[in-house]
Amino acid sequence: MAHDDDSKALDRAYQPSPGLGVAVSDPVHNPGLPPHRARMTDKDPRVEKTADRTVYTLFYLSLAGSIWAVAAYMLFPIESGALIDIRQNNLFIGLGIALALLSIGIGAIHWSKALMSDKEHIEFRHTTRGTDATREAAIKAFSEANEESGFGRRTMIRNSLFAAVVASIIPGVTLFRGLAPHSTPDDPTAGDPVHLLKHTMWEEGSRLVRDPDGTPIRAADVTLGSAFHVIPAELVELGHEDGYLEEKAKAIVLMMRLRPEQLIEAEDRKDWSYDGIVAYSKVCTHVGCPVALYEQQTHHLLCPCHQSQFDVTDHAKVIFGPAARPLPQLPITVDDEGYLIARSDFKEPVGPSFWERH
Image 1: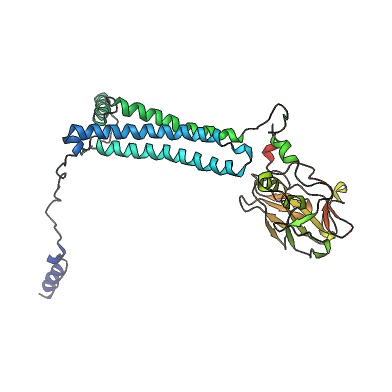
Image 2: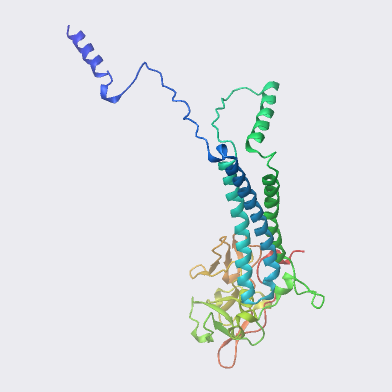
């Protein structure tokens, strides 16, 4: 008797609570699709025609933006070096590309919302490979989609879209022109990257000064373990209109002081340092990022972009990372007043190694 009472208690415990709304035997009801709401373009032919004009006008506006971006590249040549041209080049090219891409996007969205078929469809999945009949049905579906979207019969929209998409690629292709050499008949080496990066503003007797204030540096003021960001003194007097940024990008140097006995120097480079003070180009030989992180304890230089590491004690050779060659070393000494000066320019091109490939 007690056993029967326990069974009934368990049955009552496992009964679903009425408040939980659990339906054990009732199937899930399919609510179906909501009633279709016709758009104004479906009801009024004039509204449909206006939407049609709006879409292809946006596509032609995109075409105009692409053409303007190419024209701006020619009207405001970045190669001139003038600051006003560089700013206008960036501004107007950017506006042209933005207009081209934005107009395509807005036009495509407006086309899909206002003109393409918005009726709901249900597509049942199947688990087997399509038969010939299924493939024919697929072709029919594509044909119906073409008819419903109006892609085939709305020629103005279709043609303007093709023109806008093709034209949107042209500004990007045009910008690659800026990466090509710009040599002239009078100076065939003017656009040669190897020639441009092989010569910087460093020359014999150039004082090493702090970047950016231009303070000359005495060898006696460089303490053990310290690091200085330096540029040639002649660069301080150069204006932006005269190519200050371009020359600085090639001439930036990081100078450090170690114990002389810590340096491993080749015989032909023993006079490139001064009392443990060495100077190396800050331009990474991988892709040109500034190598500006100096680890005092390990004497390693670190490039923050791709983690290339260089050993300052051993000619800044690569000890880790994707860089292909050591950082170029700037030969230095001191003048009669004790200020650090350059013995000469770099003996090899600064910057990425791929510039030297032909």
